Image (cartoon, rainbow, N blue to C red):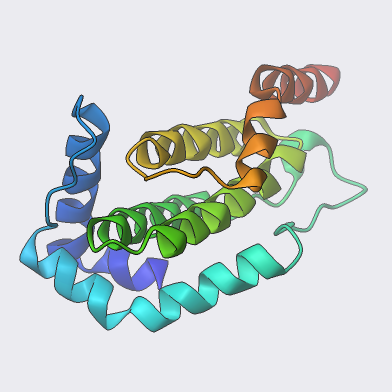
Length: 176
């Protein structure tokens, strides 16, 4: 799904710009997405829900590690695909909230959190940084959502992202 969106320039660029405009806006108002983005989200609504269900109800995604490899030689997850999927989840969240589906919007954000959470167990700094960027983008999206805030959201507040980053830097420095 993320690859399909990324390869469709009519969708991914306007989706990114639409999300960015909402991140930068001081108000919580959500404007309708561009027509191509709205049509794409509507067409893929079922797939987005299925992905969210797997993320929310399943284990946190983990990517394979090679026990014999150093941090610098580990197979790296598809981080670009990760960012595209996160962007899709955030865009779908805003669209759901705009339509009044508050529970559905929070559910998509729970999926976004679980997606980013899996990157914090990686030994390379780039994965941790992408995870932090994902949490930041989701925070900008969540601030537009109507209360009540679900209990799972406390996991984000209680997690020390600075500590995550410093741990990863320590792992990489130990490999020098």
